[in-house]
Amino acid sequence: MVRFIAIAAAVVGIGLGLAPSVAASPGPVYPNCTAAHNAGVWDIPESDDAYWSDGDRDGDGVACESYSG
Image: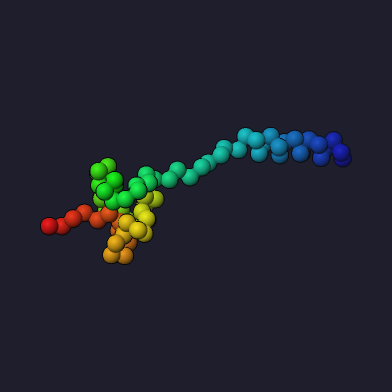
């Protein structure tokens, strides 16, 4: 019984050691909309990783909106 527990623990330990580590890769982070626009990024939707609420001046869920006019 002890042998079974030792083998099971080794297998679990090996399995955990081989598990791939998946890190979330955040989208580009822009310090402000000017930087986003200089990078060619406009109209960042709230669902995008690059969205931040301070970039959404009118609160419509879109940051760094393109200028119309």
